[in-house]
Length: 182
Length: 150
Image 1: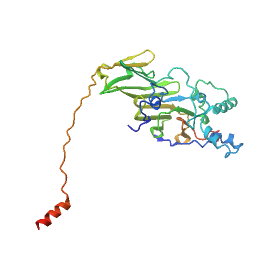
Image 2 (image 1 turned 90 degrees about the vertical axis):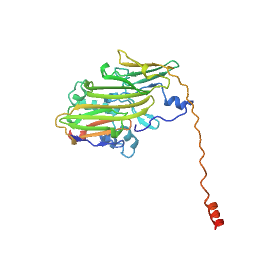
Image 3 (image 1 turned 180 degrees about the vertical axis):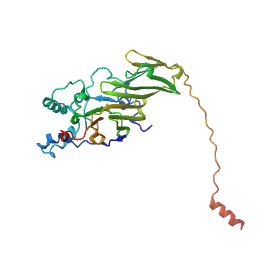
Image 4 (image 1 turned 120 degrees about the vertical axis):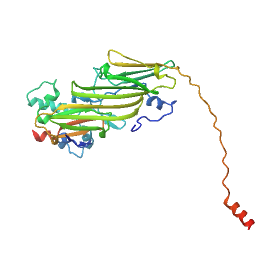
């Protein structure tokens, strides 16, 4: 865990909305580019960036993640279209839902490439990790689903007893006491 | 296996020097930063060049650049830090590896890695190549001095 790239924000603010979008796009990685695919530079937050003309073609949504948290269920969609079904594994570790995928070297339109990624979702506290279901659609979108409310969220309250420690003896008082004795 | 040193250059428009020389290099410093890396204008220049050279099939972009002076690779590595990227040459192949460890994003945690391989044209060695990582995440590996080798 090398760092945090998401700004902290209070859940009731618009900053939080922007920092926690339900859809994450632009998740492709290891993609080659053709010079024609780089568009005219534009200003973004004071920096010049060059948008990429990837279009809506095959693989342009690869890696995109969508989270839907409703009352009744936890649902996540993950585009794993770069990988074949047997190259994708889904598992839960405690309350973490891990999707990992790797494919060996293969040829695409830019050359040879091998890829690997691991995305981890944090399951809400009321989701039972054993009830997570995964389904992969024909166009490579992984649908992860789990019902919510399967767990009791009763808070366990334990009042902790505070023990009082005796005050340390005052050195001046002790001195006086020895003088009186003398 | 030999490593290629990765340069972080925004303001070194070697390729465009000839274009800017007429306008005065100091006067268009901002344009330098903009054009330091291939953008829309590169296409025009290549097309102009292709007009002189016999026309080649645009399908095989890499092969079209097989002429020693044209070898160039663009790679989108926007999710990776400069230190995550390793560029190597090995027996006539160019290897670009990038890997980043688990990091937090808006939906949880993510780690990624990929390896890309390109066949280098004959006669191209490690010392002929240069790599530039632009601030908007485009990695360019190309032959160092395209003008000089022509």
